[in-house]
Image 1 (cartoon, rainbow, N blue to C red):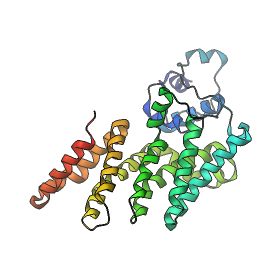
Image 2: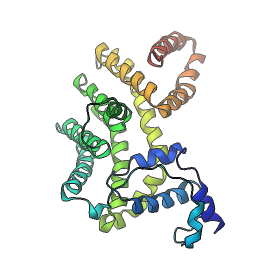
Image 3: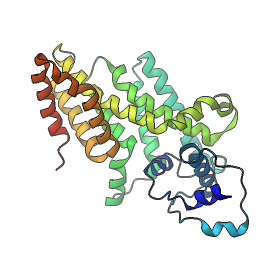
Image 4: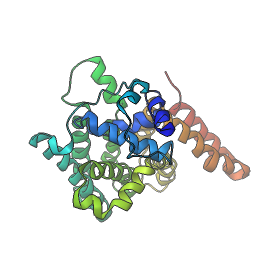
Length: 288
């Protein structure tokens, strides 16, 4: 009972991890399902001893903290046929993208574009030509992926390198989809689905680190004519946008610098190269 009271009093509204988790849930999931997912998330991230099956008495709900979560809809089974088909298609395409990327087929980029567009529609619904929708759009991870995919316009080799961050992101989405859908596939791969959902924040940080690490790799490739200056300029500005809009990317920028770049300054022959890289980063991380 005490553990349940702590759950009721927990401030979900101001918890960044919860807000990012719930943003990945399909908008058509009902309030009852959201409450169940909230308990699972709370047990996984806050209190491992929390009893998911505990049923409070009617009088205990008065202690519940206010919940500003506005995601109201029906469960997967209660979705309209159209929304269910779109959600199914999105995740089938995510899996198709992973396979296509690993096999290096010509359809990889088109599949990724389709996934992002379907996911944006699922999360933000029908486009609205107003400021509020535009703000949500530029902060949406899938919308940022669309900008990221622009690098394929200038890259003819090493495409698997560019695909890896998207593979990570799409696999997280597949795991969340299977968790919501349940059924035979979820039961079969439950171990991997639950592990992915538990490590979601860690995996997203890996995605951001990979995106950052691609820039110095492109700089090196430029010396071997495998990357163009315009490609580096485009990708550098993508990272600039990402840094400005995404607080977790900012953290990973600093982590990448301390772990991989700063130690290189100990070598006299590399110090000037590192200083030039810092000047580039100063531009990328400049706001305004």
